[in-house]
Structure formats: C-alpha cells, structure tokens
Length: 198
Image 1: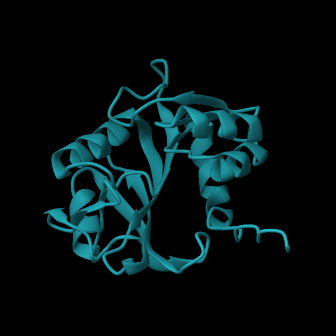
Image 2: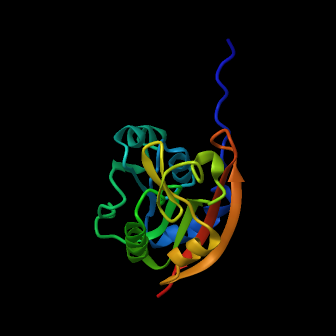
Image 3: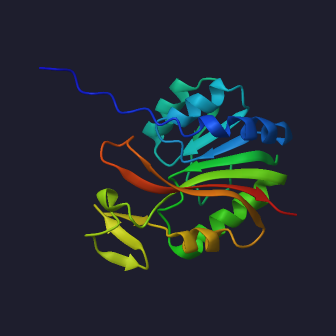
C-alpha cells in the first residue's frame, strides 16, 4: 500500500518575512491559533522572537516540538494575550479568527490592536464566502455568513466584511483573495496585512 501523501506545503508567509522582521524590532511576534505549528516553525526559523498559542493543548504541544525556540502555550483567543505586559511588534493570525460571534470577533481584533506597538503589523487570513469545500454552504446558518460546520461555528468573509472588521484604527497595507491547496481541496480565503494606526 503506498504511503499517504504529505499535505502540500503552504508557503504563504515567505513574502511577509521582511515585514515581520522589521516589525519584530518593536516587540515579539504573537501568533494566534498556531495549530500544529507549520507557521510557528517557519517564524521561529526566521529568527523572530515568537509567542504562539492555540486553544488545543495537543496542537500547542506539537507546535512547541516543531519550534523549540518559541514560547508556545494553550490558550483561547478570548483570554488575555500572553505578552506579560509587553507590546507585540506584529501579530499573525492565520485562519484563527473565524470561530466567534461577531461581537467577540470585533473584541479580539480590538485587543490585537491594543497589544501592538505603535505602527505594529497584523497579518491574517480569513475564510472567504466562496470557500464552499470547507463550510461556506450546505450547513445550518447561525448568523450572517456564520455556519455550524460539523458541530463547530465557522465564519466566512466577503471583502466588505473584512474591511468592516478593520475599519477602526487600522491602515490596510494589502488585501488579496487567494486559494490554497494546503488542505487537499481548494480553500478560498482572504489574506490581509494591516498596520496599527495611532
């Protein structure tokens, strides 16, 4: 029997590493929802001071083993960020801000802004409304573009919703729609880079 195919690598962070290195001079990089640590490993390998967390203890343990130079914790994004009173130079949140009711999502984004040093950067990816392979249709709707997907809430964003999420106190540096093959079937998402405004 042939070995299972390895998941395709998703090199999305590569082009953002210069921005993150520059932002990292002002404080550590905070990774929200690190999962099993693919991005954590890449960020740590780039020499960034990294604090990462995930709500899954098992995933956080895997991420910690992949990136021993990083500080990796088990934590919910709705809890205080583990920065020990410091400000972050940058925040990375790849496909980790879509699980919450809208008011909680707004609160998390507001706290991300507050934790950043002046001019600090946020790099995030968000589920797109055309992400039909991964829940954007065919599931019970619990709010606008918010569905119960296999028992878990999952939000999907159009461009207007992304811009609305970051309307207050942010400067949009880049916003692009992408499709990744990382998960097997094509996954549609928005990729945004933002700077905290004073």
